[in-house]
Image 1 (cartoon, helix red, strand yellow):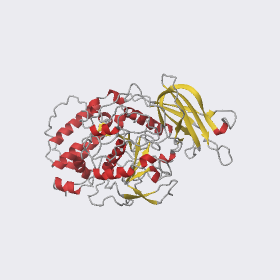
Image 2: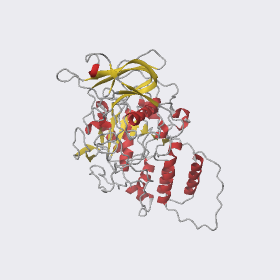
Image 3: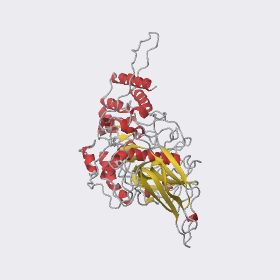
Image 4: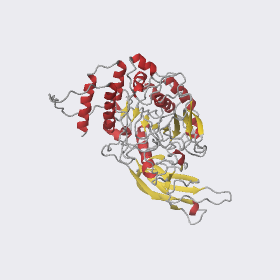
Length: 569
């Protein structure tokens, strides 16, 4: 089947090259021939990973030493794992207390210090009253914590004391989730096609950015190195099977596997085919590319601004270039028969009719402000097991704002381990917490690598589960790490700027502007409340939470300014 699909796309591409088209159309055809989105095809074989779910129990005979106010597990040997979290039965029941774990590095007698697990995680979920937000599979859950390769664990969950000095009851059904991400599928790929920006231990992340695909471009103006003034977890432990990758994001996509193709024999009795239109041709290419993504595209290459501008008119929605585009916008008009929260299978991209655009210059003048599309590691590239998520996709009408988060998984991971961190979070979101898919639309690691998150297409308005009450008309970006006391790497902030310059630009949004969103319900804004946000906002702007951490939140102004610059404003 794969050989057949590869042969089909090879024949189609050959037909494209034979057509006389304008320079702008040629650029668009070349770009859209690249697979742009994840599909619902079966997963690639041999994806591994597992989850151990262990019930917690009282730690002592009295409420003071254990009992109802304290549950956990004493030290014990377990099968290898790398990420931990705690779940419970009722997703509406809060966990008022603290969760701490200790882990033992695999194959050693070395135990870590007690590490805190972030207990407030429901604010990252789906909006109330949506299918995902009311799913019977949903559970209450803490944030996940990356601990590295471990085979021993100890945990304690302590309830907060109330005003009378007693302990509030803990949620029912507490379970410890130990997630093994499995081996990194990237370890067997050709490193010459890897987009990962890896730095050597002890070096500044900016050195990777300076030699990566954006060398010579304006950055976010920040030059501070990766600093961690307050240690928040044990030293990182790396799986020996995971090797660092080499930065080469501008290399061509891996060629499709090909099979011998028999020459076509024309049938004189068959009617001549109808003339091909450019828009129809591009749609066909996009559809074929989308279906091949799980097999052929571990990453999408950097798309320069000129090509991004050329492609923009072919992608919905098309917003003409205006000096104030995106500085202020209201909720778009909706067809009452179309609920953006309803599940639907992915459809081919609907392309703009460009019959009124005569030249490449006219197309460029009409194009919105769109930044270059950054290199993006796809779900295929980080090894997402597509068999565990919901098979259909849910879309919102547009993307008006980006909410920035930190994953709260700790900072003790290497960039080579980032795909393992993502696979672990993915399993925890879907199999442990009961979400339909990975919660965030995109993720960014400490080296500035950008990853596709929730499936449905990186260039499409996929409805995520990241900012409770404000998932509609927005996208969620999770910077991997915890930034309450640790400064985010400059490369991560720059990656956020580049990603938002491109994705918001596709929807005509000015990164330094403001937008108006309608709350779906939360602890800051009642359902139905109209709220004005920065186009690039922090999670705490829409919900009472520490996320994305004070030190990352303080960098969002820099990200906005840089993103506007990348758009050419």
